[in-house]
Length: 129
Image: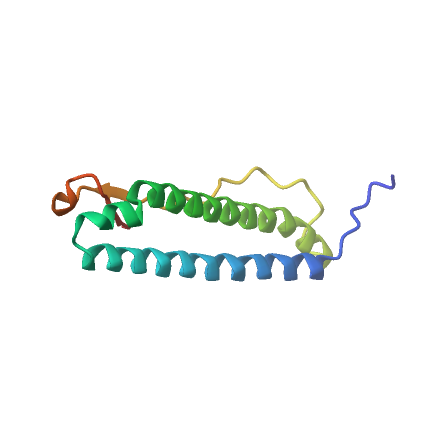
């Protein structure tokens, strides 16, 4: 090994940009899906609603979708932090030094279940802060 880093920084930058765009579209799609689910839940007021919409199962799916988004956002943040010293070295603005550990970005709030008395109290709504 020569001790040199061999990477196409332009390709890395394109990958990071694509990942960020994907995460933004994914987050928009998840938010739209949650809004549609909430709208359906609000408009359907009989006992079959809880059975059909499986509120507890939906909450688990929603949490997993958001967990994935959080992990991907953390990964793109981490990847960009790792690329910064390499980009600076290529530009000649600093010597190559190992990047310092950086904090992960703040976690997004998780949906909170809210009781729905009109459906027997067992079907939660999703409220996103």
